[in-house]
Image (cartoon, rainbow, N blue to C red; front, side, top):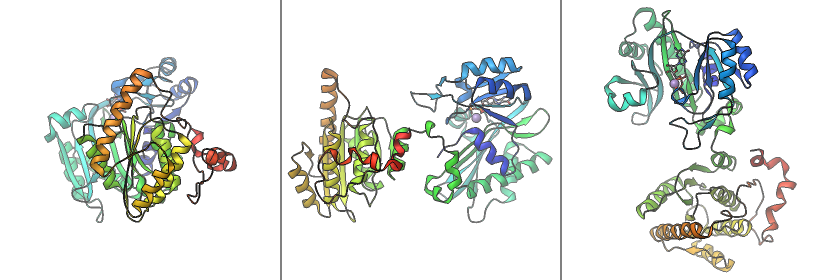
Length: 439
Ligand code: GDP
Ligand code: MN
């Protein structure tokens, strides 16, 4: 989970790190007022993306009037940062912060070190907006210092970091104290990244965190109910957000073949095999080991709300999970949503025959696959044909459920619950479960 710069700075401050003062604003009037208190100031677009400076999301203002004028231009603009993807990021909040006289910019972060199963301090003298270039062209300018999770941050690691940044005396001490706070924050808040870029030396000789990025590890969110308040769902991929409400592990990708798979390993393998047949997966989706018919339907709706989808490949290996349950979920989902795109199904494992029987008896136009490779090949082929058809005939959308996400309906999977009206009114019966509609 990502949070905004102003939230990350609040956290850093709580852990004892030096951050410049700032005021969060949502209107040009608020920016003007803030700039009267802080001048000269910097206006910083609060979006979940780095690279704002280069995209026009960081502006200096000498006076409150200038700040207001700039704010009018910034609010509502689509910030096309290098990290934001083709849609860019809309500016809804601006952080007005002290303009600091910068002497030097450093890069400092703590990240997980997967190889050593620990943490790593990453630091560079060449901080600022060109850090990605530096990493590519001069990797030697970036130092990495491992930190053990069990033993925690040690002073000597701070001394080594200070050395790498060329900081001595009081500055070295300040850096060590900052790193100690950062490491504590990283572990206590279950971060997946804590990054300060730039960390600056001011002309007055003080170290300050000018920009901050803190990401949380979603796997630990149950330990941090307070983090939910930091969430800004407008910044998140809407399908990923909806998937998280249904407890589905879903990640949006750029391709045209929707994947509905149980198990992360099988999901990865499915993406690989689609690629090896010349296709591109539209997503990673693991419906989990305990996928219910209901989850399958939610997954279907999420996949079909993606305009890029030209085929769906359902690839299920029934272990603990039974294929007949999945088959019922598929039948139910298809009956309700009536997808226009072709659907390829491969069921293997526990109760596979029973599952196939259910699919067959449903009389639906599904494309059965013998095995994974056969399924991938058929999905790639079907997606190609569907795309060609759309090019010539156009399309009314991927399914009638398109863009209309409905959660929390209870399909029991026990009997034929009456086709398409089975779920339509459930949102009325369970208004508290209509989380997805709040978007
Ligand atoms: P990012 O582009 O999204 O990483 O946004 P940053 O907050 O890092 O801002 C980009 C750049 O603007 C920084 O690397 C600094 O060079 C500059 N910048 C931001 N705030 C200040 C400031 O208060 N004073 C000065 N002199 N430069 C700043
Ligand atoms: Mn930055």
